[in-house]
Amino acid sequence: MDIIDLHTHTTASDGSLTPTELVAAAQRAGLKAVAITDHDTVDGVAEALAAGAALGQAVAPGVEISLQGYPAQGLPGSMHLLGLFLDHADPDLGAGLARLQRARAERNPQIVAKFNQLGIPLTLEEVAAFAGGELIGRPHFAQALIARKVVANRGEAFARYLAVGKPAYVAKWRFPPAEGISLLKRAGAVTVLAHPGLFKMGLAGLEALLRRLMADGLDGVEAYYSEHDPAYTRAVLGLAARLGLVVSGGSDFHGGQKPDILLGLGRGDLRVPAGLLAGLEERRRAVLASATVTTHN
Ligand SMILES: [Zn+2]
Ligand SMILES: [Zn+2]
Image 1: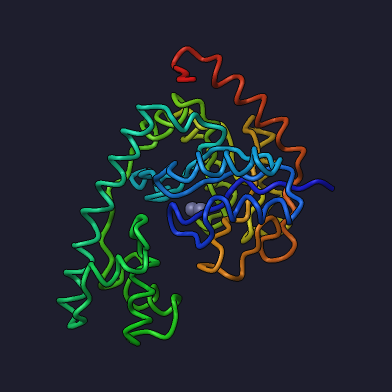
Image 2: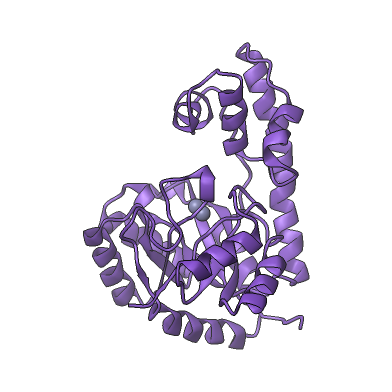
């Protein structure tokens, strides 16, 4: 069976492979297509597309952004949204992503201040060194804590300090769902709710969340994912078919930042069928045909 991977991160966000290295790895893995979906940025997309053209590897431009949820309705308070097959040069998309990056930049000094109050004299410069000039995120704080021997590993860094509700956690600004979905769709993206299994909610709750997101314009759901077991994947496939959502899938590959997750294979047995591309491309044509999309080619 031909396989694809439509959820990966490069050094443009918090992955460890450059876009060129990731595309070369996708080719070695025999992937029919790979999507680049860095957090809050499309900065790696142009390099990935050039590498894909040079190597003959199909590359889909994408992004992963955070959205506010619907906590007042008893639904998750935040979520991740993938935008696939977008126009990465779209100026409105660039402005929207810049807003997210500003929010992230303001958040990092606040996290540093919390560590300092906890008696850990971390500096932003020290954390920035682990980001190598790319967006600073919590994984880089984890690396700085490991280097200081405050914690033994990334898991401990999140469990003790960085996870939601822990002493160094700072909430970050996110787009309201309708606004974030619209931002990506106006750039031609097929919008997909990422890794629903991470909510650890039942299928009735997931259906309520998907119906709410569909009212805000959502196109699809990531049924195939490294942390989804086969039964859960089948259940999400059934739900998507019933609701009229397209289906996507990917590993959430981060390279050495998450060494247990393999490109294309997840924890070893992911295998996202390439047959999903037909449905995604059909939805992409529908998104482009809608009046709100402007192209910049
Ligand atoms: Zn995510
Ligand atoms: Zn991701």
